[in-house]
Length: 302
Ligand SMILES: NC(=O)c1ccc[n+]([C@@H]2O[C@H](COP(=O)([O-])OP(=O)(O)OC[C@H]3O[C@@H](n4cnc5c(N)ncnc54)[C@H](OP(=O)(O)O)[C@@H]3O)[C@@H](O)[C@H]2O)c1
Image (cartoon, rainbow, N blue to C red; front, side, top):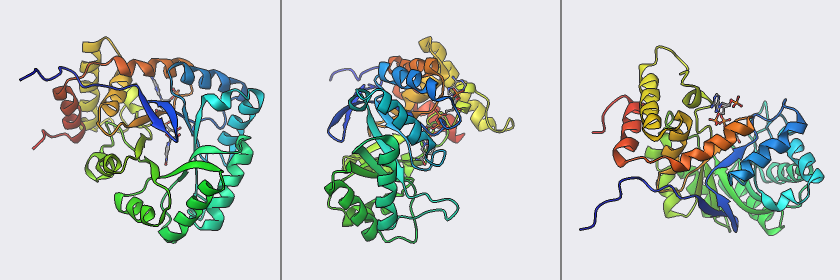
């Protein structure tokens, strides 16, 4: 019998929409309100660490995030081929959701205009719309692929059953699922999202991988939340063992899952984007990984 590897393997590459991609993505949700002239430094830092998937959405800043990215692409056309764009439609404040065929197609066309692109690699339905039949949403997505406006399609914040229902009517495969997933929010481990992703070759992208900040700052939302404090302590212990940072450990925890999860980092600091790449250097044992999960749940595994 050969010895089991001491550390979990963190692969650095994947594929999406026919493109080679890195295992970290850069997210544009927090861009609106930041200076346009600082965007190039953030995207360059992301590309430096091979975070070439750029995640955005029509609703981020009511189109502002896409507009900012579009300005950068028109200033630097070569950038278009260096990045893989994931955008989303279907959130319509204050309604709040609309996945009718008419709306999804119009939303995608508006996104392309703002992004100064003829095609995006991936278009996601941002959140499930309970009033739109999956057959109708699927018709919109199929048409977007057939018209060449998008290379591939996917979903965000969908349950496994919602994804399955959409797939049943789609002529193309669901390529991406984008749930909230972090060491603090571990639902996708248990609700079938990551299992189905593996069985159907869907790329899972984790939004708010640092829980929106607390897993980097260590400042847990509620000071009385001992469970979160315990989680931060475990992340810090593993970070110390590796001479690294707690956010790198939190990202490595996601990268270690066999579904090939792509964490979408959301910092506005180019330096922090570079630091995040240290996640790939974390040596995490199977026991470390489960210790993080146990701390997150506040209980040992059964
Ligand atoms: N599909 C969806 O429904 C959905 C929902 C939410 C988000 N998303 C996507 O996921 C992306 C990432 O979400 P997120 O921004 O919440 O991700 P995140 O990486 O979990 O959180 C980013 C926040 O953490 C802070 N932070 C990161 N490193 C830090 C450090 N070392 N010290 C102090 N603060 C630190 C950042 O502040 P600084 O900027 O100051 O570093 C920023 O405010 C979004 O941009 C978006 O693309 C998707």
